[in-house]
Length: 157
Image (cartoon, rainbow, N blue to C red; front, side, top):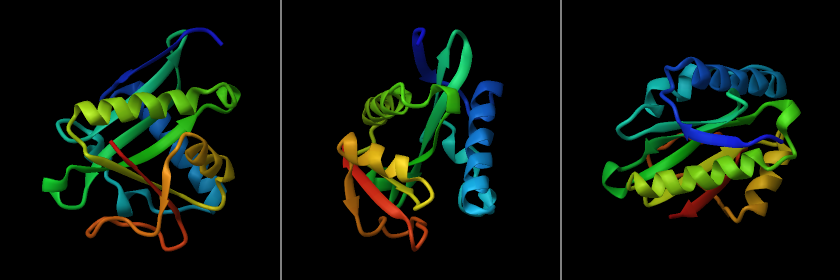
């Protein structure tokens, strides 16, 4: 795989939006559709509190992931949202690299702990999070939405 460049991009940029919408499309196919706007507003992934990373290979977006603040603002908790890698780039370590950069970026932004959730239609995501050392948890912090049947993970930064 050619060099992979991972960098912050505003969620309003064409590259970030293409990755974000590809993630939504894949989730809708896997889970039979869902209401994206019900529990996530794209602007939550904007600075100064949120951010979105895009992975590019030869200048083309091949993946991305974002963080939004959740729970009590004083606790500096974040939720990982919309990790996605283009199908032809999967199994090359792109998702693990994105998560590594995301953790460093979140730490630098002052987040103390991150949470994420995934579902049973994404067994490769569950395997990834376990492989890279995220800890399973029963619930999200107070005030943060989580689907009842989700697999939830956390990482203290």
